[in-house]
Amino acid sequence: MSLEGKVALVTGSSQGIGQAIAIRLAEAGANIVINYRSHPEGAEETLSKVLSVGGKCYMAQCPNTRGQTLKADLGNIQEVPQLITDSIQHFGRLDILVNNAGIEKHAPFWEVTENDYDAVLNVNLKGVFFATQVFVQHLKETNRSGKIINISSVHEDLPFPNFTAYCASKGAIKMLTRNLAIELAPFGITINNVAPGAIETPINTKLLNDPEKLNALLKNIPLGRLGQPQDVASLVSFLASADADYITGSTFYVDGGLLWNYQEQ
Ligand code: BGC
Image (cartoon, rainbow, N blue to C red):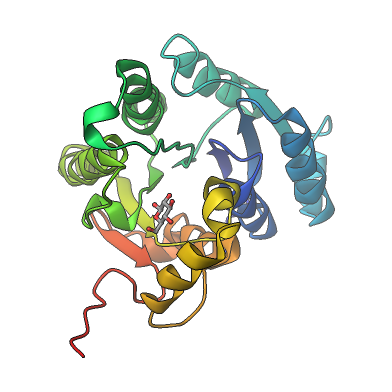
């Protein structure tokens, strides 16, 4: 499952799942572009971890650096095309796009502000849409195949009260993936969703610090634990590789059994 010679951009890779994906893809041999919005120190940490996992031959091919950190807000549509273009310019090509950056805001439906709605939809959907569009244009122009992996959520299917904008964005990502699987297949471009459940990352900080809520959640997870970012990263690495060439338009759950857990006592 080698990614030797490939270049991957992982959005939102300064922390959590994105950071683990960047490191895992680098371990498989890919050159990585690290993107962050507000945590440059996290991006630096990812960069040093990416550099520390080796990948010798890339040092030769790309003597300056094997990793690069790029600041861009995926929720700001002006910054999105530039992020993709800069990634391509730095390494001369881009083969793998991992749309990982995502945010959520907690509020009952009747209190959601337009600002919060826009923030969530812009990062989780509009940013993904247009980053993917520029990536696809690059692949078409250079006549090459490529892989798109969206980090969605179990909440592309499962209701999550008080997170309606988040669920709407993830449900939309599910349909974007299915549509593009068909539209992009003639170009050898595949697209898949990875849908994490409850993973121990900064997006969950509040929950992790609330023992009552945490225990209630753990009771819903058949495997009895939170997921780790690495649990997600290993699947992404597989989907980014040639071993997954025949897989497109699918969602893969990494949730310890959470999604379909229903028990009657
Ligand atoms: C959300 C988390 C939530 C988890 C399981 C994820 O998509 O980001 O906040 O804990 O789903 O419900």
